[in-house]
Every structure is written in structure tokens, then in C-alpha cells.
Image (cartoon, rainbow, N blue to C red; front, top):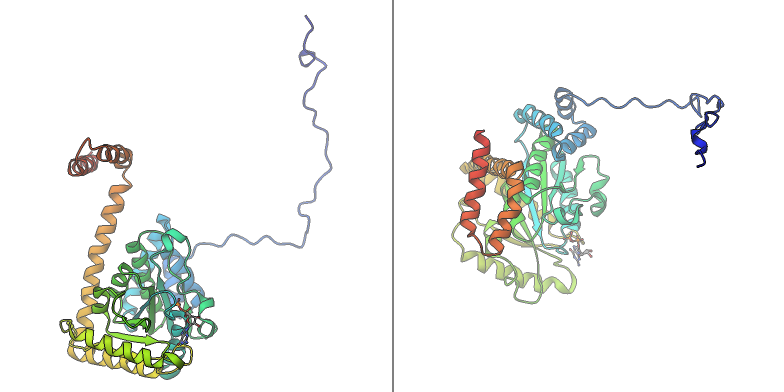
Length: 366
Ligand code: GDP
């Protein structure tokens, strides 16, 4: 049998030839930037309190991050910022897609900055962001004039996680913006129901943008959403649409009478305007600031903020518990099996839930 050539003494499979010496850098003048050191919570807070928007943005990115070390740092920054928060007017702005939210927020923002001075932050809660993995609400390009205004800060919706998680991050961003000296906060959302409740739970005034349409304006709008509104504004009250907008306003006013009086003691108002032609904007913001004066005088302003803090305490607990449960390795491994058994009718949903919870609590004890 022939010996394999590689077994021969003379055979060398790998021969390393002496190479040419490489220069240490192709471009000796290029200096590699050292990796940026992560700032400390104290450094973030110092920058934020000085109104440094770059640091504010970076802190918001930490708030939005899912990495535990970012979350821990974010919480420390928020905690340190808390004494400097609370001094803004927070306004929720909601409307269905196409209602004119971006056009309106551009016009509203310019108006309030011109009329009242100060600084404006526009944040957003996009309930669809979980699916679309990216969000268009609060996008700078949609608000052309505000985007280039030196006193505005526009931040799109956080995109990862459940609606509750997204909303919590937006609420925490409000605090950071306030600490950075933003005394006017808009929180935009798309009008689909649940997200309004989330926005309502973090603002002082809830503004609902409506359109006049086919005549029966009230049909498509959920009762719960209308009850949340402190003001309803009918957009596109211009040109041929003016009469229809006025008619819609009357219908909304009549409908509001049917609801029980709001806790705030404030009667929600209905106004017509045109975001595009800049008509009726002043009246809307006169209304918002009149509301703020009214509820500050009767104590409801502080009461509502306290109630919101309470709501968020429970929300945080719920979120924590839920995440701890679903991410527990033993629960995770059992979940699919139980789900299958329920789907096949082999066990009831209650038994399945109990088994999973028992497993979870047992695992916690060990
Ligand atoms: P969003 O989806 O709620 O943000 O709505 P947009 O602001 O993008 O507006 C949707 C469309 O309505 C755009 O084509 C706007 O030009 C138009 N629009 C917005 N405001 C007005 C308005 O006051 N009057 C009229 N006629 N059109 C408007």
C-alpha cells in the first residue's frame, strides 16, 4: 500500500513564509477615538439641570433601553431629577390618523412658545410601535417648524415593549424633560382607545382632535375617550368644511351634556380650528391655560397628579410582577405545554393558570 504523502517526514502541510512587515496604521495621521466612557448618574443630572439637550437625549435613550444596567442608571438619574420636576403644563393630544395631529402640534407649539415663552417638549406614545418596530408619532420631520425651533425638543415614541411599558418610559421622559427646564410638555397619541388611557394618566389636560365628516360625528368615537377629554377641538374648520365643522361642534357639545359632570368641576369645551391655516389656535390655548388656572385654584390639579402617581405605582408593580413571572425559566418552560393542554381541552384554563402560578411561587421559595 502506498504511504500517504503527508506522512512523509519531508512533507510540511503548512509553510509559513516570512511576510512583509505591515505598517502600524494605513493612515498614520488617523487617531482612533477612545471609546466613550459611560457617564455617571451625577454627570447626567448635572447636564440635564443645565438644560443640555444632548445629555437629555442620551438619558432618554437609557430610559428606553432594555438592558438592565441602562435601566439601573436611568432610574438613578430619574430619582435625582425628581426634585426638579412637576413644574410644567402637560397636555395630551390625541386624534385618529389624518386628524391633523402633526400639522396641529406644529402650529400649537409655535403658538405657545411665542405667546408664553419657555421650552416645549413633544413626546409620543404609539401603541402600534410594538408591531411596526418604529414609530412615526412625534417624528421631527412631521413637525417642520418646531423641529428647527431652538426651544423645542421632539422625541418619537419608545418602540419596544407593551403599551404599559412604552407609556411608563414616556412618563419618565416627562420627568427628565422637566428637570431640563421644559415647562410645556405635549404627549401625542393616536386615537385608538387604550393609548388614550395611558396618556390621560400622565397629563394635566387631555385634548381630543376630531374631524367633521359624514354628519354622524359621534358614531366612531368611543364614549370612554370622550369622557376623558378636557377639550374637544374640530380641525380643518376651513373653506368648504367650515359649516360642517360647526355642526360637528354642536353635536359634540350636545353629547357632552349627557355625560356626568367631570370630577375636575371643569366643563369640557368644544372649539373649531384649522391647524393648516392657523385659525382658532389662540382660542384653544387660552382654553388650556384657563383650565390650568381653574384646576390649580380648586385643588384638582394637584389631586390629579397625585392620583396619577398612585396609578403608576400600581402599574409599575403590575409590570414587574408580570415580567418576573413570564421570564421565570420554570414558567417559560412550562407555559407552552399548559397552553397546548388548554387548547386541546385536556385541562381548564383555571387549572392551567393555577399550575403555572404554583410552579412560580414554589420556584421563588427555593
Ligand atoms: P396626523 O396623521 O393626525 O398627524 O395628520 P397630519 O397632520 O399628517 O394631517 C393629515 C392631512 O390633513 C394632511 O394632508 C394635512 O395637510 C391635512 N390637514 C391638517 N390640518 C388641516 C387643516 O387645518 N385644514 C385642512 N384643510 N387640512 C389639514
